[in-house]
Image (cartoon, rainbow, N blue to C red; front, top):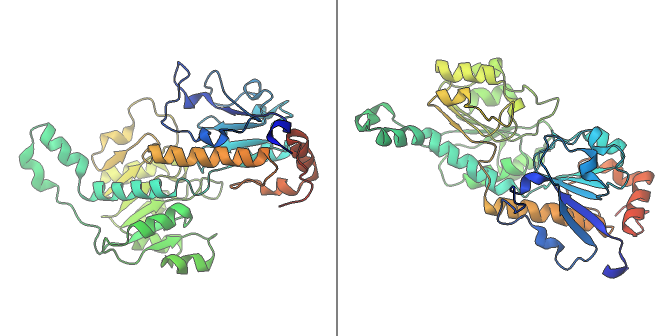
Length: 356
């Protein structure tokens, strides 16, 4: 089937990609993937809502989502919706079960976030150990002579502990080579043994990792199994001079327990990019503590990150529109379901009766 013969494939982007004038907030969303693809009709939601409404989806076949939640109500009556594409790798705000029941694929941008998140994590490791925020403040406030109170430490001879040895965790381990650290350790009950061997990481239980690591960096998804994974008991297992870094999801860490540990000095410091409640539009209590670095769930946001995520998300939509199996499918069982494949064929005009 030629491009001109393909039925229109409508892809909508949520409103939070754009400012009030409708202009994109970001340098590159990857939509150039659609250049020359005449069957792709690109649009944007008119307003931002915390959860996508069914009327916003309308007759779209695909929706690329930045921050809004996708609920069962989001899908009501959206018979032509084929896929939700998350702009990133987290999908805890997407009701995957509801999508699966409605024959809607959930896709994430696997691999696109690995390098920038790993790089940002290293930046935080250095900032924490060298007290960068505090030392900056000493100069700004004229407290130069207080500098002797803030002796730092190097990464050399210290141990990284990774919770979740996926793409980000593996990139982090790779980028840290050359800092003279001890061999890294990781906890990931789902990673095959050969993955640990390939990247030179020792597999440990969570308890063993917490007592061993000087840096505990979280890179696992938020699931029912990981919600509250790091609580008071786990924080007490960590070394007093250790640091916790969370660039994953806020619900993985018990914020009350972490706040108490940091305020009491049971933990040397933390860097947090995500929180139990987002967005945090009022001053956050962690801001009271000088041994914490905070970011509004954007520490890894770079032009390159958005370009790569955007290209990946748009390519997945393009693949779907032409009958090719997209990458990064979360509910991959749909690809074998007859009702989904019939829907896929109907909306694209491509025969997809058998799996790729």
